[in-house]
Image 1 (tube, rainbow, N blue to C red):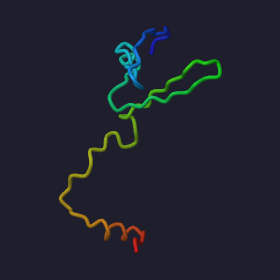
Image 2: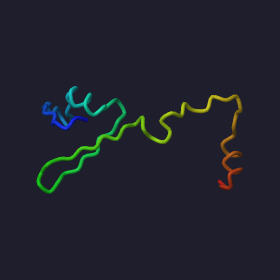
Image 3: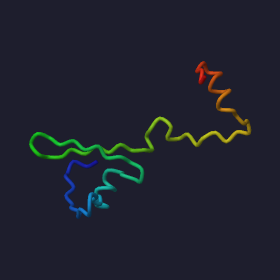
Image 4: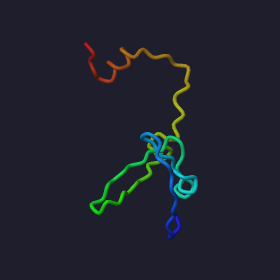
Length: 83
């Protein structure tokens, strides 16, 4: 992000407000990302972008193998007794 501030505004509708496109581009905000809000003592708001695609399993596409599993048997096989 560049050193200059990005000023923009949006309208609140109900409990929601849009993030201006300029801000989304500058901060690389995409669908599924989360915003963490922190109210400062001086009344300013700090927002941290948590990008969904940067998580531990972001590149994991799931298991598409041919082996069928039985959740009860497999769960017990890992040492957890469900009875």
